[in-house]
Image (spheres, rainbow, N blue to C red):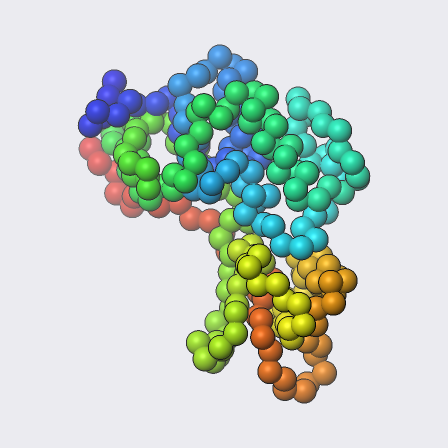
Length: 230
């Protein structure tokens, strides 16, 4: 079956992180080849591709944070992000998921068509359709920014840790980091080692050059249509 010149796939998977790749691999192991993986990023890896801040590291032991069917020679108990990303790339290659993957393809809309019994999908790469839509966008995919009064007047550079600005060297700059969770704990020691400055909380107002948000994520929401077409 085809819709507007496009094939109706058996399965469309949204996201190429652990969840999406894991499902794609299992489909292939079950002999199902008619599926597509939609990934809005430029590479597989999900949050481990999106997050590239200094010190980015997993806080779960590597032997637990990996597929049981895809062993890997981890170099430490708590792997760094670049090694996790390489592991996921290796899984995508090893299990031949790459040919099924559409990179830079963001899901923009999804509508269930009752009569045809399939999903019609709008993506940044064009329309497609699938009988089954599997959501694997991950919980750590939409950076959250607090509404700070006066932020619009800030003249320096500001970015979220999940969108780290590698063009901002930070050397010799006064840096303010908002947040005190796991990401902040990883970032601060790594930028201090490189002789960057982090504003402390002593109540003294200072001018800062760069503002970094380590403020976590909001739940991912897929653009599923509210109405079902008959």
